[in-house]
Image: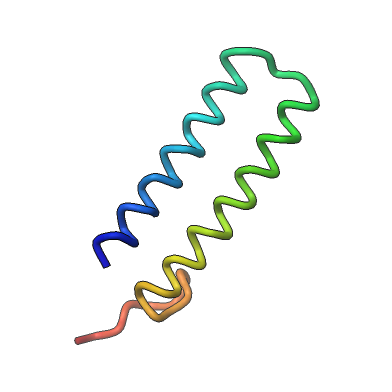
Length: 65
């Protein structure tokens, strides 16, 4: 569980770093397209991790334990 949460945090940091790099360096159409693809892939990975860790979809309410 701890490893999964660490991976989620790492994915969020990588997305933020890619956005900053794209905006700060050179915002060409190619770099924005690559950024969009990376964000989509990392979002899918984050959702997959949430499903595995919490055994529910991100939009479902949390289970009572």
